[in-house]
Length: 113
Image (cartoon, rainbow, N blue to C red):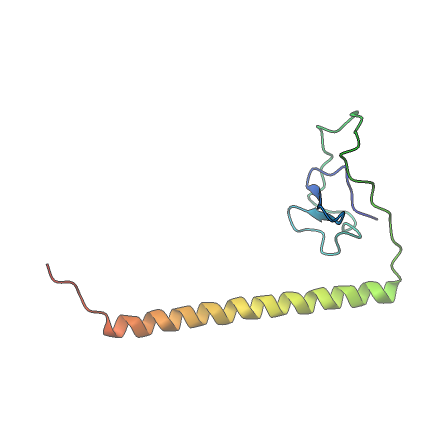
């Protein structure tokens, strides 16, 4: 299944260069802009767009891309590795901040009134 443009959590943005960013505002489509997850638990049809006719400012519809099963697994593995890198960086940064606060606490001078 491609990106569900009729979902209230779908957004797209067209830049001056002509590039179009398509994504889920909740971050539930890890394979955006190619596809939404099947049976997404947060899918809700956008009510404001029902029956409207859109003008030229609306981005063109997403062309569905068929990704072979082995490539789909590669994409999932790559995204999981990227998530691990980010989580590790956050963990290391939080530990560094805790350590620096502990070190500053040992030599902090108390203000005298």
